[in-house]
Length: 289
Image 1 (cartoon, rainbow, N blue to C red):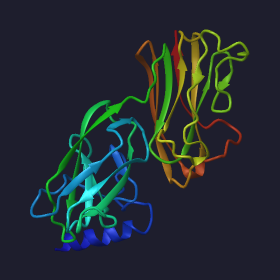
Image 2 (image 1 turned 90 degrees about the vertical axis):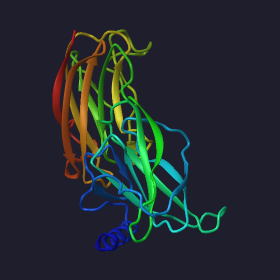
Image 3 (image 1 turned 120 degrees about the horizontal axis):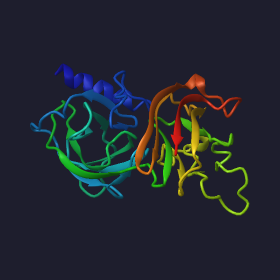
Image 4 (image 1 turned 180 degrees about the vertical axis):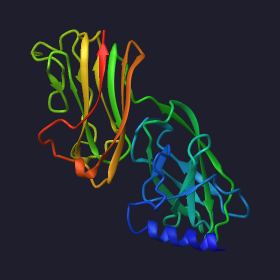
C-alpha cells in the first residue's frame, strides 16, 4: 500500500514538469520524457488493467534517436503505463495515462516520448509495456519488437560523436593539414570549389542546432575515400546546454571498419560557450594511414 501511495505521488509530480525522479535513470538504454524511473523488472501481472493497443509509426530507431513517440490505449482502470527493454537496462519508466479514449467507453489513451541511448547495440530488442492501476496492480506485459540501427554512417574512415541529452554538442576535428572541421566548416579540405577532393572528409549534420530536437544526437565526419594520412585531433564542444544539466558523450574513430579510437566524456551546462573562443574539450587523437 505504501508503494502504491508513493507511486501515485511520483506520478503526480511527473505531471508538473519535464524532469524525472531523483533516480533519473542516467545510463539506461531509454529515457522517457516526463516519466519516473524505478529499478528492477516491471512488476508481475496480478489483476491490473491491460495495454489494449500500441501505436507506432514504425519500429525502427537509430542509436541516439530522441523524442520518438509511442501511443495507444489502456483498458478501464488504468492509471499509468510502464516501459523497459526486456534484455537491456536496470529498471523501467512509468508515465500517467491521458484522456479517455473516444472510441471505447472506459478506456484511456496513453503516450510517451522516448530518447534512445547512443550505446544501444544495433539489432532486434523487445520493448515491454504494461499498464497499472492506481493501487499499483499491474496487468500483463505487451511486447513491441524494436529494430535498432547504427547511427554511424559507412565510409573509408569515420569519426563520430554521439551524446545522451538535449544539449547541442559539436564535433571539432583538426586534420593533419591544420584545417579545423566543425558545423560551420563542414569539410577537412581548404579548397573545395569543384567538390570535396579525394582524401577529404565531410561532416554529415549539425545535430540539435538551435536546441532543435531532430531525433538525432550524433554527428560524423565521413571520408568516402581513404583519408589523407596523418594525425586527427578531436574535440567536443558544448555550444548550448539547451536546459540539460549535462551531456555524456562517446567519440569513435574507425578506418576500413576497424576501431582506431574510442573516448568517453561528460560536459556540464556551465561548459556551454555559444561557439565562443576555443573548440571545446580535447578527447583524443586518431591516426589514419
